Amino acid sequence: MSDSSLVPERQLVFSPGLAATIGLEEAIMLQHLQALYEHHTPQQRNGFAWLSVERDYLLRSLPFWDAAALHRVCRCLVDKGVILVESPPLHSAERLVFALNERRRKAPHTAMSTEPPPTRRSASPLPANWCPSEDLLQLLALNHNIPRQFALDQLEDFIFYWRERGETHHAWENKFRQHVTNNWRHHQQREAETFRLSQPAPLDRHWRPSADALEILTRSGVDPGFIDEAIPEFVLYWHERGSAPKELNSKFIQHIRVQWAKYSSSLAHPTEPQRISEHWQPSEDVFDILRMSHIDIEFARSLLPEFIIYWRDSNQAHASWNSKFLQHVKYHWAKRHKLTQSESEHGGQPGTHSTGRTRDRSLAEDLSDTSWAD
Image (cartoon, rainbow, N blue to C red; front, side, top):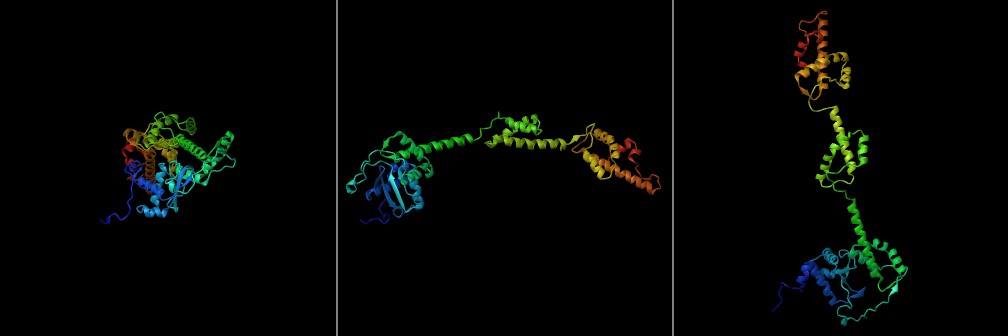
């Protein structure tokens, strides 16, 4: 029977159990790499069997992946501790140098290998000028994400410690790898702890501004009672946002200053309608405007008692009594000048249609003329 055209190439074989454990793509890649040991002779280094394979070969034998995908799957195998890689990322390197992450006493199919068995090195003290190999530095970077400079920064302490102890070892590179990975783990833990401590404490209903913040605000003239009343609103605002800023006291000072300015402005210039008080007096701004309009100030003051009586009796409320009084004075000042002009036109005698000056009329007549209040 001829071969089926649907399967023109040799099939890739993978273990379903392995795929369920480490993932389908990882299982395909791992068993493909493991099969390379059957046709290549690995190099024994540091107890691992290392192979070097061209990237183009992997692209041809695994055509459903590109270079970036090959690097991604290999990176997953490294992160899961299945293989070791000491070559640059596959999307930028021409070869993959890898080893299965298991100690091997001998390379696979040693019967076919002509290499002599590795000799056991004798233990020796650590030299004063000892340095890790480039392979080890790349291994730390690729398998543990440890920066090269961080690893080199640990070298001085490592040499000092082991030379002071005077011990001998067979594999100083393994000792250095353990030393660096332990320090890297402690370094990451310290960074995580520092980040945790730098986060602001959760804001609850018992929060109070610091003594320094309160002193700054009181020195600025803010009423302490106003500050106390503003705290619950401030706490609620940041609580609903989910997280409070680290500079919480500075935020509180800024918030209080803005609110106090608004409150003070509302007292000086109320926007809510109010009844006129019995002892109400116009502001100096009103008299300044009257002076600029060349209106006699004493004339304006003479109108004030009647103005207050009228509006208190009417029981109406207005947002600005200053504006009302200004209109009132201008109205009567205009009437006065109209009367003067009329008298001049009639030879000094009052006009026949004149309404008379304000002071020539009775209070009842003056109050019954409310056109100035419209």
